[in-house]
Amino acid sequence: MRVAHISDVHLGYRAYSRTNELGVNQREADVMRAFRTALRGALQTEPDLMVITGDLFHAVRPPNSSLITAYKYLTELQSQRRGAPLVIIAGNHETPRIAESGCILALLSHISGVQVVYDQMTQLELPALDACLLCIPSRGVGDIAQRILEPNPKFRWNLLLLHGLLEGVTPFALERPIDKQKIVRDEWDYIALGDWHLYTQVAPNALYAGATEFTSTNIWEEAGSPKGWILYDTTTRTHAFQEIPTRAVHDLLPIDAADLTAAELNSAIESRANAIETFDGAIVRQRVNNLLPELRSQIDGELIRELKMRALHYHLDLRPPRVGFRSHQSHHRDSGDEETRMTLVDEWRLFAQHYPLPADLDRESFIALGVRYLEGDEAP
Image (cartoon, rainbow, N blue to C red; front, top):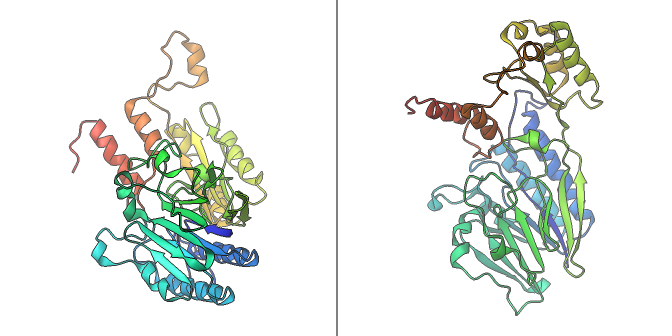
């Protein structure tokens, strides 16, 4: 049985202020384009089964434009597949906090061949494929520890679909990671995983498809990583990752401004940008470390405006020296000083920059609150 596995599409995701010729947020349009590309690619492979393992939508109430377009694309897809099975489970982004609120995915169940699971852990039987799917949406993750998860012996093929982070996938997680031993077992013909935005093979039969575009809270750690979907064969237990084109994301090599003149700093900023062939229209971050206040005011504003016009988004990340920092020149003047050490606040900032956050939590406010706690101020 051939399975097309798509995950973490995040339709309705918006970022930055640019819009396309139709007035749609450019990143929202990019995400929708990636989804359509994935659907078209999957259709060409003629899979027996398609699965989407969570976060099809970026929010509980996605923009009407994304909802309508998604419904249209999936209806067209299923028409061409003649109603072949397509199973969608809910991720944390589209799952309301109150179960009684329902889930937007329920709307998609009216499309031929589409089955959605958004509330509790559910076993779906697909007799036409002689397959049984144990579906664990985001809301069902809490029941994993109390349940015995095992294949259904009445069916030839047994798949497990899960939206959640397994232990060992990431060093930072908002919640306790899922016990890997409960999920990753050889008796499952395929374990289709979602929630982690990077294509990752956990075991020969357990795979994160990753996201179809750059939509995480920290896209910089994903820069350079491919986006796409997975075609899996349950007979041979082999798979092929199908990469799809996306908006370019570049996290440029940091500049150490410790001993640079204003001219040297501006030249470094310009040369870093010009060295990227796909800079125009891309999402770009340029970090500048150890930047003294007097040098900050001498950054070429016209150059930065030009770079921001060329890129879809250009983020000049200016970072002051750490506490106790000395330039190389001052270090040579006083080599007997203690080595530079990061303060607890510095370590918190570094940690919080990469910590996965819910979509509705502002990262800068999160970091600032932590700083207030560490510095002894009363937090609200």
